[in-house]
Image (cartoon, rainbow, N blue to C red; front, side, top):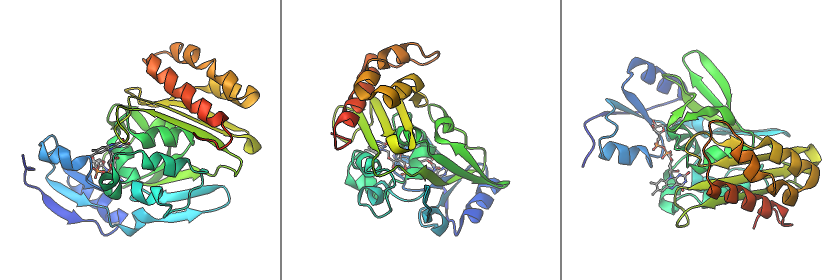
Length: 275
Ligand SMILES: Cc1cc2nc3c(=O)[nH]c(=O)nc-3n(C[C@H](O)[C@H](O)[C@H](O)COP(=O)(O)OP(=O)(O)OC[C@H]3O[C@@H](n4cnc5c(N)ncnc54)[C@H](O)[C@@H]3O)c2cc1C
């Protein structure tokens, strides 16, 4: 099938994209097109206008200081994989990028597009949650920040309001001593996950976070397991995972999710940080 007819406009800047979105409720942003393209072809989406933001310079911004790196929403998975932008996470970002789909998809797909598309199985949602990232959103009333852990509100549903877009992602820097584990359960390398386990331990800063992703809804934080990780290490933390997941109200993670989190913790226990 081919897409229904639409008008195409390339946004000159973020303000232009917002203006176009506000003027036409039926308009849709186009970033890498890797999720939207198939939806258009299958006519699951029939926007009156596509607003192409891929080459919008403000969405490829970079700003760094000693504590944070902020990068624009339209950097691609491949650019992160290749180290085109600085990695403040001791290798976690490029590791995750490499595991997304295959190179042709990574060449075009963007981090902002992936977060906004909000497939609960997507890698960046879980990654940004375990890194405690902030998603910067902008609309007609200005910019606001949203913690990555609160961004996904359900399958394919986000905290984005009408005529708002993701402009950037703000990442706290990990120290050079930080270790992480990221375990994605999928049938073949590069497929969407059935379950994701992600863990970060940064002893010098006291940061310990453990997240279970691809749960069918928002990534689930495991604060008890994370506290045990900080106090007693990865092996002791792994013993808590199944119990903490089982006790979470409203969540329905499976045995596979517990395995994914335990394997992420096991990676973290290795000297290199990741297996
Ligand atoms: C074969 C295949 C395998 C894949 N495997 C994986 C995988 O293993 N893991 C994984 O995480 N992903 C996977 N993906 C998805 C891939 O990461 C996509 O690139 C991503 O989901 C969408 O990014 P995009 O830039 O292409 O967005 P688009 O397709 O252009 O847009 C997606 C949606 O987001 C909206 N949007 C785009 N940018 C913004 C923005 N800045 N602000 C607000 N809304 C915006 C669009 O309007 C649209 O609704 C796969 C895709 C394919 C085709």
